[in-house]
Image (tube, rainbow, N blue to C red; front, side, top):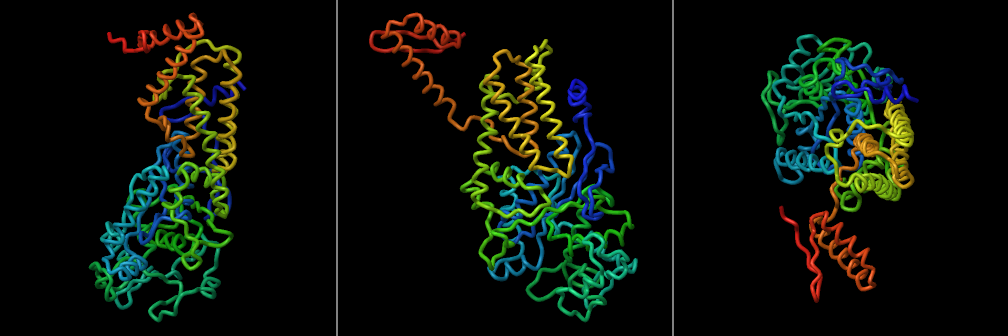
Length: 504
């Protein structure tokens, strides 16, 4: 147990030296793999963001919260994380929405981009390192398309440019499908311009009522899949650690991204690990407008706290299907209160909210009870790390965080002789663990502190006057003296008790 304690608290730079192996499920290999960052102590992640033509719904939120927790866990271990979340601000759906509303595509994309950013901030999703937009990279997309033509991987027809999937021998490897099967089951309208039904557009020729940009092939706009390749490699390089997104993006989007990257940069290029979140359903059915079962994040936030939504999402493994339930979500309001209770009890013992708890730690001899408590904290912490290292098993890790919360309440209730150092360490480790889930953000009292002070002081004076009427002078005097030590001077007059501040 002592060795485990020492390993846990060994510290190096900005992160823990204790860092057992992380295993994650790689969609590309279809198995658990040990995570080994390309650059020591750094993680570079790219997650496919929204196409901004409508409100952010709970299905989107499930993916973004899941990857936010993964990002936070890497940071918990001390990794420096570069996190890219792109925004697709030009697309068929955006153009269609603009035409329906009689607005420009730019008005639609800018409006819903801002709404999206507001929503993810409201969900306590950490700011990305960058939020690249497709329209900021038109020149780079044109240049990469030209390179693919030069290398023989793409061809131009009537102003559009298509990627030739036959040129990638292992096309379909990411999604685990064969080209023959994909062609047979392809729901692609017959297009005489394509050499293969699975060939996809890198550049789309201009059509009336559509925006356009100049290119060597005439006016047009980017295709979907090449956009992410350009943006990911722009910020993360030709080879980076993790590419994430929803399960529904494995094919065709991520399959086609990978094909483009292989053609441009080589077989071993692009993401080394592919992570995908499971689908979110409503009563077993995928969310869709036709079923009228889409739940916007903003509607949920009117009734439920963002942190409760985060806990609910974390209660299911990121790769599993989550059948959304309002009743189940409501239960995590109670769970959140349990977590806050432990925090508030710690603060009540410490005597204040502590933003610099680590700086307050003192070297002091700790007793037998302190050692026992700290050893138990280490066991909880290492169990938490083991759970998260196993493909980010948030359901298990969340159960450990709750166990920690209950343990804090129990310790503060049962042990009188705990040292201040032990209590501060409880506080530090508890907050760090909670930070992985993105909860306990509202640590300031949810009340008007000044108003509360005056009301509490009035209550204390009222109680003191009761003791005076009962001739319980020693208690009344003790209250007066304790208030005086706090800088509040009491003056008992004929008709009322007055008080004032002691000013130096």
